[in-house]
Length: 85
Image 1: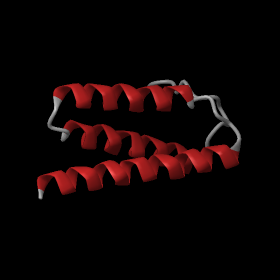
Image 2: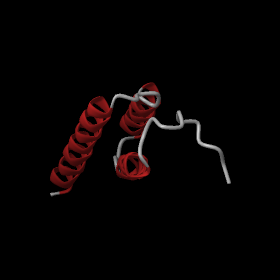
Image 3: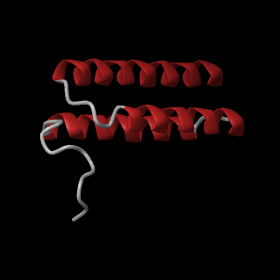
């Protein structure tokens, strides 16, 4: 079993699962972006944001970041849906 790089009590298991799920969904959604340069930019941006906030421990800040990440994901999914229609 791999050892987590997160601080021990930084996130509850439920929060950690939620964050990882958002991260996976974000990367999957980015895979659907048609332009290679845009895809690379978005992938680098998402990885950078999650990496930069990996050590966050304040519960209110973590909840806010989860909400923001969900909003970004929904916006990206909506943009891709509109581009297809």
